[in-house]
Amino acid sequence: MCFIAARLFTLAVFVCLFWVPAGATVAPLELRVGRIQTTVDGVTREGAVALPYNWDRHQGGKVGFATFELPFNLDAAPESPWGIFILRTGNVFEVRLNGALLQVYGDLDRGNGADYAKAPIYMAVPGRLLQAGENLLQVRIRADSGRRGGLSPVTLGPAAPVRTQLFETAYAWRFTGSVLLMAFSLIVGGIALSLWLTQVDTRVPGGRREGLYLWAALAEFCWALRVADGVIVEPPMSWGPWGVLMALCYAGWVAAAMMFCYHQADWARHARTRWARWPMVSIVLGTLVFSWLSMATDNPAWLTRWLAIEIVMVVVFVASFTVATLRRPKSGSLLVMLAALATVAFGTRDWIVIRLSDSYGETTWVRYSSVFFGVALLLIVLQRFRAASAEARGWVTTLAERVAEREQELQSTYGKLEKVAREQARTYERERILRDMHDGVGSHISAAIRQLQSGQASDADVLRTLRDSLDQLKLSIDSIHLPPGDVGALMAGMRYRMTPRFAASGITLEWAVDDVTPVAGLDGQAMRQVQLLLFEAISNVLQHAGASTLRLEAEMRGPVLHLRVIDNGCGFDASQVPRSLGQRAAALGVALSLESRPGRTVVSLEFGG
Picture 1 (cartoon, rainbow, N blue to C red):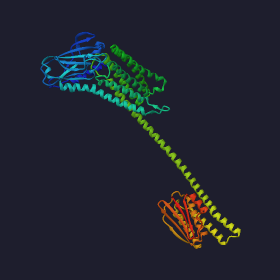
Picture 2 (tube, helix red, strand yellow):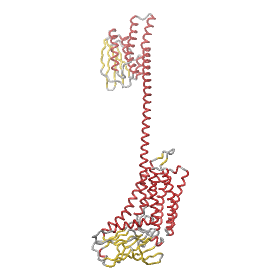
Picture 3 (cartoon, rainbow, N blue to C red):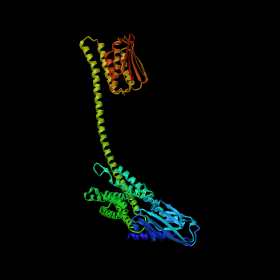
Picture 4 (spheres, rainbow, N blue to C red):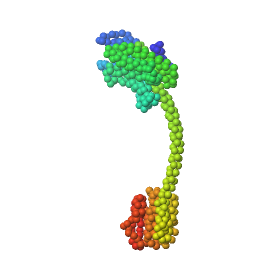
């Protein structure tokens, strides 16, 4: 039935191509009948011939030569250019018209070389070679074993319709179509290979690459090489190895496409369906063996019989895949099922027409079924991408919800920690104030009590000690509100607290404090130490110096802050640094220097140097 359908299709095509509208002058001539002379194994035979002539079918695939003589008559010599169109001939050949050599394609003395049967042929005919009455077209071919040698019907006529209506159409289907199919297969194979390299099957513990994409890539690459043979006139190696390689590419495409279906159906997950892998291995190994036998024995029948067995195995596999798909239909599996069914139908048609019938010039249909697999793969990838995108969006939403929950937990925890930190800061500040009061105010009060108990201190001494205690208490309270590093504010507070003491002691205060920038690194504790350091220097002046003037200076010299306490008292031995001054300066890490003589004593401090 497939053969009859192919014949009807061919007849319809020729009717469309050769139909000439009214008013046309000359219609193309189709040459189908003539004489043939064949030479095989040194034996020459002659006889009548009706084209198409399939060499492998008539000569059993043996190597030989054939000369076709195709006579035709013309009412008059043509005035316009003519051309010859041959749908298929070869493997190498030469064409003569009325005894004159028109064209030679390949070397007739060299076997298993070039193959010009892969593309349609067009030859321009010089007008002088055609004559009114009888004419003779001769085509001499050399046919190699298993390469589909022979001669299709020859069309002769005006150049324009022969070239545009016949040759260009056939060339587009045979040659340009092969190039486009090869490019399509390479593109789809490249996409599949990139997906296999980047995609991991998350359903498998530990993850693994998607075998579906790998087999799709192998199938497309094998088919791209197989289709490329249709545009390669001169194979890169001799016909024997090249023919085996092309057969293996075909088998590799079939086996890889079957593995593609195997993974699409998830048969690898079930022990009862793992049998489906063995036919694929058999297809590749069997093709290797029988294609080599065909080449070694010059008998294409070996490969023809094996292809029949291969078709049976593929039919069984596709039937199983179809049943499994219909039981659990999924859009991706349905697409692959339709592509597989179309491929089986096309492959069976090609085997009957190309391998069994006398037809010659027919092109294979199965080459176009690769497009179905490519489209199916792209649609499957699109579906999986959409599913993965939806799953990813779900993950993102879940992750966002978890992040929001964590943020709330962190905010709650941070609030608790901040509350604890504030409580710790307040506790630390209270402890610091109590410690300062104990060390400062407490020690002065204790000193005053000892003075009173000893009975040796005057009332003025006791009063001075109590005033120092009161001043320290006020300064301790002021230190709570001091900004970190603001030494200018600290000195202003001391001026405010100590001015009554200066007036009571008969000391004039000279204030020479500029606007100073905050000192980095002076926190609350350090500011309190600076306060005590200055108070210590001022207290020494009040208690021991007998001075009438006290000067406080503060200025910035670059990044360094300079503080100085100057009095005009009696002075002291500057080589002996008061212990409390030295300890506090060392604790702060500031530079302390002393200068003292009667009438001028200077205590200098440098911050930030």
